[in-house]
Length: 149
Image 1 (cartoon, helix red, strand yellow):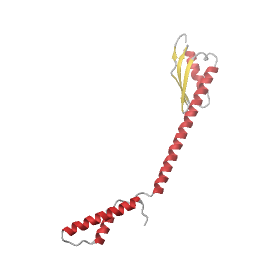
Image 2 (cartoon, helix red, strand yellow):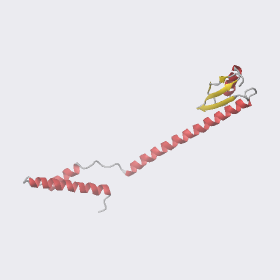
Image 3 (tube, helix red, strand yellow):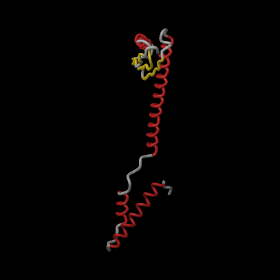
Image 4 (tube, helix red, strand yellow):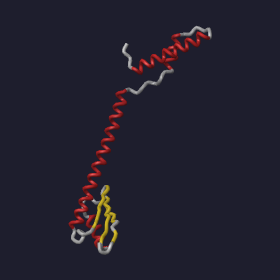
């Protein structure tokens, strides 16, 4: 017969257990019942292992889920970078703001401005320009006002 490795091991283990029971009973002077011992050994063997096909299907589903999550995260990161670039371009194109030092980050439509402005009016103008860029949901302006910047 052609048994898998686990099946052979289970059969061998059952045989060893049966032999040990037979020897222990023989030492007591009782004659063992081989059929009963074989049934008992079969009952105490390990529980059945999950079918390989089911395990592979579960792993495949999990791998697909992880791949979708990674792809979605990569797409969001790409969208965030593009939005930050669009806001930065809008700020540079605006008269009076071109000379400012402004860094921009974006996350799910929320834009944060970093850097410095020479006046409060230019700082506020940067906020207004950024908020008008398509895709911007909110603007957090953390720019410092530094005279002469």
